[in-house]
Image 1: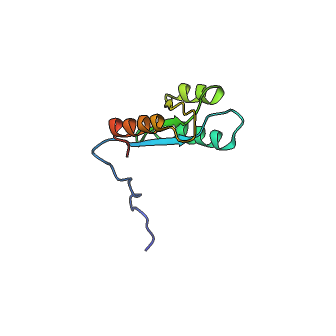
Image 2: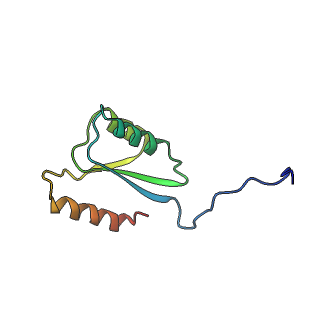
Length: 102
């Protein structure tokens, strides 16, 4: 079978809209490799298919947050202060429920 004339496979379309994705990282520092990879992924995912939100457990500022802002990617910080920070965890759970993250 040559496959000529066959239409390429189409991505499944969800009637609920774009997939809601939360990317969670400890902090956004301009020097970190994981932070740069996360920023690259978040800013290059198709907005037709994915609605991305970046959440940092600690602080977020600098060039990478400006890159997220310029690309229209939402981000917020839990501002976690200590290792077992129950309030930060509750804030994350509330956000996941309210936004109905997939």
